[in-house]
Length: 297
Image (cartoon, rainbow, N blue to C red):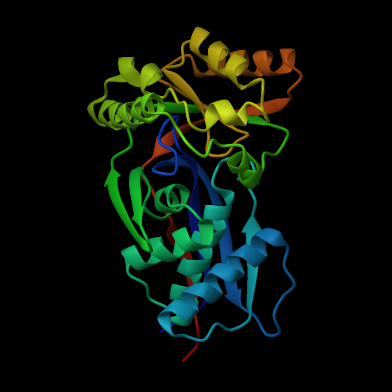
């Protein structure tokens, strides 16, 4: 029996983790609650709510179900255009709401493929849906993923600038070709990073998060980035990287979280960038339903 309303809890995510461009993502213990309800007539929505509805409609089409008018109540605890998977939250919420409200059942691999089609890349949506550390690869319309436990003892210190970064604008700056040396550099560090996280080899994390593909190009938008990385390291961070397309910078740590956050803030402010810090953790929890109101028989 379909529900008339469902409340979902979905995690923010961090993608790329330095070298793993479009292939690594991890869930964060920072969540948004989204309530989607049947509505008659349809309720006007803002951009985030519209993205939820569009994803629900896409899931219904995929499953061969009709999508009724919907209303969306979005508690926006995850900032937009800061590299924390806001759009993945919207799309995951829509697909899961379609399942609960419209009987639009998709298997995990179908939901991942549809979410990737909506997102344009699989890293954030995989981490949002399934939690933990997600390694993803695409071949045409097919998406492969390997989910791994995220280290529960690692804190994630987020420096969230007050300015937005456009994912599309950042991607437009990326090099169309890489030298063999740079390709090997990134591939080797992506593999090293996954192994280091799984095996708890935190002494490798700084080198394993180095990147020659997207972060250097994105310094054209965010030139203060290297100074903030350096400040995080000086304060005791195990590594620091741009989260997804930015503008958030993530530093992983086992201690000294407050000092790391303060150091990143001071380095940013010294270079003309204001923002806030949030201390959270990597999370193994993916999207889930908190509550459902069933349609009367």
